Length: 143
Image (tube, rainbow, N blue to C red; front, side):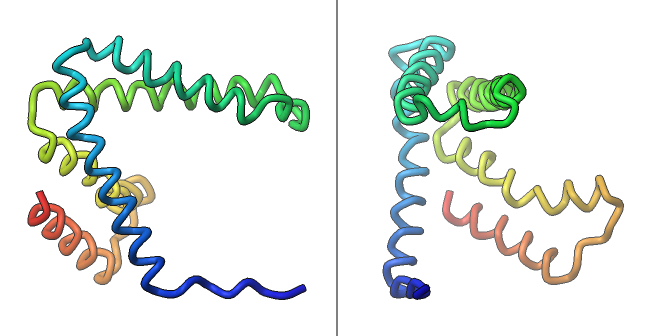
C-alpha cells in the first residue's frame, strides 16, 4: 500500500486562510440577516436547511449503527446543545458588533486548556500559558 504524500505547504496555508475568511465573514452575514429576521426564525431556517442536507447525505446509513436508537438520542442531545450555543451567540450578535462577537467566540478555543486545567486540577505548562497569551493577543489585534 502506497502512502499518500502530504500537500505542499502553501496549499495548507491557503486552506487555513480560506477557512478563516469564511468563518469571519459569517459573523457579518449573520449580523446583516438579523436586521430582517428574528433570532429564532433565522436559526430555524438555518437548522432546517442543515437537517435537509444532512438527511439527504446520510439517507440509509443509520441502519449500520449497532444501536440506532442510542445514536439518534445522542444526536438529538448534541443538536440541542449546538442549538443552544448558536442561539446565545446569535442573540449576542444582535446586540454587539460582528468583530466583538467573533473575538468572544474565538476565545472559546483559547479557554479550552484553561478549563481542562481547572477541571482536572492541573497547572498548564509554560508553553501552554505562552500559547494562550499569544493567541489572545493575536485575536485582539485581528479584531
